[in-house]
Image (cartoon, rainbow, N blue to C red; front, side, top):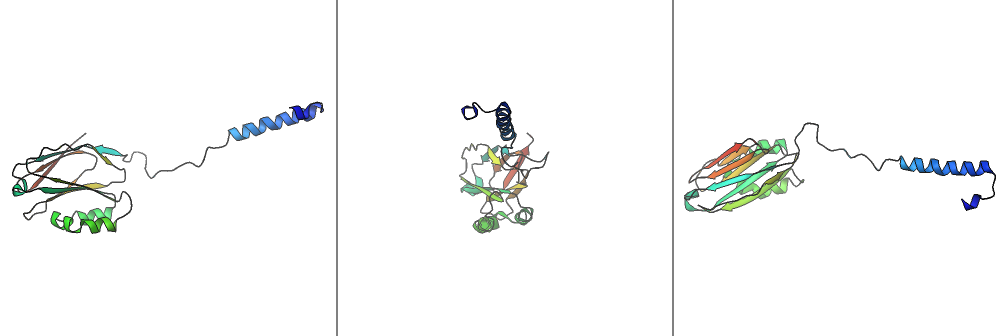
Amino acid sequence: MPLLRGKPLPLRAAAAACVVALAAALAGCPKGPKVLTKRLPGGPKESRISVRVNVADNANSGNPVAVDLVLVADKELLKELQKLPASEWFEKRNQFILDHPKEGELVVTRWEWVPGQVIKVDQMRVAPEVKAALIFANYFNPGEHRAVIDPRRDVQIRLGERKLEVSQVKK
């Protein structure tokens, strides 16, 4: 401390003590506010599911089949979607997406496959907020063509001639 050279020892000791105290105070400061997440202990975490697909040679009477995998985080929306047949989902899909713009509330993955097509779908990310998932298949013949699935278990989709079949396996 060149500025204190030649000053009385108590003044130099006090200045040194102030420097040490300031350094200790700065070192003990928190690095910022603690970030809280929406997750509860033991609750679901972000996960991934594997989707396997088998398209029969005569699926949808020989026509391509549009399939949507819908991840839903809102309970009221889920209740509404569980009542829809696939034909109504495909009619109103764009409006549902517009009505639920909040990120993660409604996530739609779209595919279209032709009969006999060999499909390899990679694992899909599922956010912790997702309550359930639905699969809709757009067949020409009447029917529900809808399945509600657990979004944290791998899924096997089979597109048959006139109907959708879905099964899940435990991880």
